[in-house]
Image (tube, rainbow, N blue to C red; front, side, top):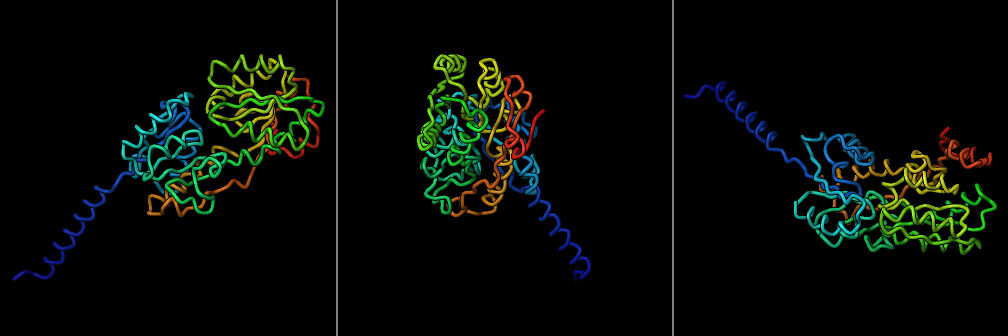
Length: 328
């Protein structure tokens, strides 16, 4: 006859063994990341990219440990936009659980898959680009966060005109990864009677020649896009603006931290951190179609006084008082 205590002890041991086995077999999620930088800057638990580092911090805040609950599968275009379609197809073929990507990579991903969930880490106009049906009901396999860069175009131009009130013409530098930038700038300027000069940057090797063309056209100030070509070259862009003595308004603060003059826009690293909230919801069973796109509520004005001094420019006190950060 089986002793009751022995039976219960054996049953408990069996249950514990099964639980341990289940724990050891727990799924490690594979999160795909398709970025504009080189893959070496995006990979691993301590990536060089500040944005990916912010995303991993967001995952930790959601309770995920890298290497235990998830790993990343990265692909990087290294500033070459033509690589996105091939990299998107390659990443989709890896059968990852969810993909996180910035605006320039999203169209290629939409073409590559209609089933793998995709989280936008900032798209300038997700509805206008046909990525989602609406902000409240995305309706497909894509959701995430918008950048609202297009919506704030007029504000950036107004701030630039306040900074350089006598500027007769403003050169607009945008790269081909953000085709909506110039039409939005042109529309914002048209209503205010301002003259803009368009300069599209198609590859990295064209940046210096574009600055020469802008100065030859007698531009007196710059409005600069933060697309996949110009953003990785932000230090060089800021240096060229200073060398050509052109006051420049940027879309993201990273340009100002790299030596640029002024920026107005969202905190892109915080956008990437917030992307982890969407990833968590999707991994727990939520459908992207049902997750409303999140819009930024805070925009920051950052001013670099050192850059202003080098340009011989006095920042109006009204701008300094409204700045979220002043770099001295």
